[in-house]
Length: 494
Image (cartoon, rainbow, N blue to C red; front, side):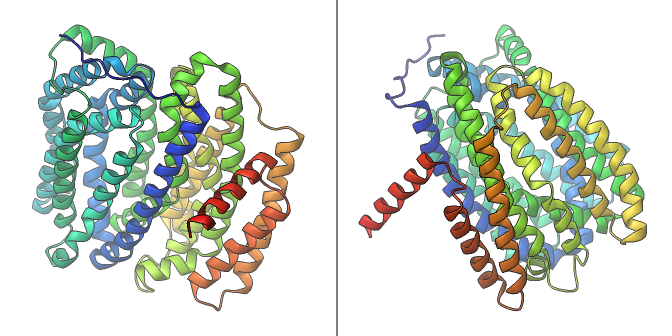
């Protein structure tokens, strides 16, 4: 098949392109975060812990099975298209053909697992069928998103992600029909995202499924390291679901699932960086090792600096966040869960973004081995801590997030060891130390402004951190210069 040639990317420095795309993704993720907060403050409060626990249980099973047939394809597409856009049509065509062939395998696997699962009543079966249909669409939709990320089309990716986030708000008038509304809206949002992605990607390259076993073999082999990492990470979800179900109940699972969704909202910074970094890193790793290592060190230090105020805000405002989102009668152990979860922010920031560097260096397989150790540690920690916290604090979810923190801390240490290029020197350690001091000032501001409106207290805390961070020169001189230039540009526009 003749492949349509596409123009090369306009000349632009790799770091400049990363900064530009990261800014767009960051803006999109911020808006999505605000929309997600609205969703989390209405739907879980109305439906309650048990219903959300059932939702998490059914969706978790379908998600795991779908990941087993994805074969690491999305990351593989992003990396390969980031390196060579000319062959984009060949890559995505083969991926779509392979996914269509795997449709029956996915459906059969889901039906077998649900048939063997305990406690599957009519309501859960209805939700399962809707999720199966939705994930069939997702299996051919996600590769299209990967093409757009690899193409570095950050604006369209952000807009479509925002639409996907806003869809659950459409269920607000229908919540009296129960949690099935969330499954139906997931199906509709998946269908809408697929149609829009198909149209947008179709404007870049021809979209035709290719049924070529030789091409499928290359995809499976090329995507195996990414698939291994994805599946290992999803074991976290499987272990947590079944351990909570074993030691506790649907209510506890509902609290844990909402804590996960809320916590994921605070990960928009590494998510934005990861999407912006991967295509450029794939090229940079082959073209300039020195530039690659410079970006690696700067990103890591930046993540640590950003993680400190985020951790401080979540820890000290967990009670206010829980009261605002869920009221005082539901999810009563959420404040403690969020406090413990906040400790995992810095390790997860490091792991989620540093993984992009390892993928770009084609070291994903080695990382998979370390992740297996982390998952094993998580399983042991969770099996010990869930019953302990359930007995002592009446909160099994707290034990599960504590196990997550310990496991992610180990993963962060593994990531730093694998990168082989320590970013810690006198200057960077001084930056981190100053960020810790600024975070301490922020914590004091949050503590003394507790009686005020939570938004006012948060604003004062962030201002305190920003002022102290600027005065203590947490940012490197060139980074401070960029902030000044950006501020001057915004001021002139006003």
